[in-house]
Amino acid sequence: MEPSHVDPFHIVTPLKKSPVLSTLAGTDVLMKLENIQPMGSFKIRGIGHYCQMLSTKGYTKFVCSSGGNAGLAAAYACNKLGLPATIVVPESTGQDIVQKLQKLGADVIVKGKAWDDADAHAHQLTEVPGSVYVSPFNHPVIWEGHSTLVYELKNSLGSQTPGVLVVAVGGGGLLAGLVEGMVKVGWSDVPIIAMETIGAHCLNAALQAGKAVTLPEITSIAKCLGAKTVCERALQYAREKNIISITVDDREAVRAIEKFVDDELMLVEPSCGAALAAIYSGHIQRLQQEGKLQTPHGPVVLIVCGGSGISLSQLQDFKSQLGLN
Image (cartoon, rainbow, N blue to C red; front, side, top):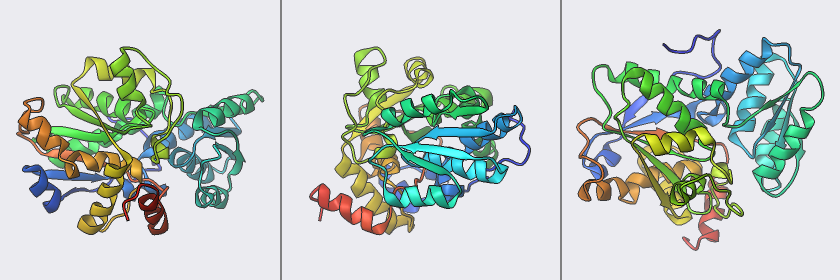
């Protein structure tokens, strides 16, 4: 059953066919447009659900560590609930994100080079009574919130089953939620392609090592994929379920963003570009040729996770950094 909510903070997003991506992939590609969620990403599903649940338990101060989308979702949810939010961000966070957080009424603290440093500080802040920690991705209630995406897909597709789902992986919260939803709707056998950028590839590194590993640092420009260690639940599912882990470089992710703007008139951040690169860089087509992915009998469902860490000027900056101009 779909988790019951009192008016959730997320919206039901469209499932839209992409003629261009369908032609490239050689099969129907349907885009789940999470980029049009409040605050621009899927994060509001899980974090909104979690904040609503916590608000019924008497907590008066919410602390979230995030360099972007999770923090925006937490700030948005707390703003809706009329509760104070403190968002701890790493130094790599853009000033535009900090301003967006402040406009939502959040108290913003800048701490450390990477998300992991900000996260450690967020945990310290929640030692005060009445305060509670909001993880960007690692909690069963958050995964339950993310699983609502699958119920929407099921409603949209009716009797049709997807051939494959394509998703970007950062900390692994969305992946965990998707798997849990897919089990509940009877799609356990549907493969998932988990896309990461090299330099933020904590899931791929863990699968290669056969255990959870911590990346020494995040070197990818896809900062919103920037957890050094994937959550244990996502790693467990990646081992047990039909999950194909693929890494792309930053250049592929940025090229995919640029093509997507031309093809679909939507601007998304590099973390989402990693998912788009599954098709733009030919990975799905290659997997089919190699027999690692059956030619999907159902459509390819691409989760367009969105993201707020992007603008036209930032896209130009990324291209300059990567020598793509």
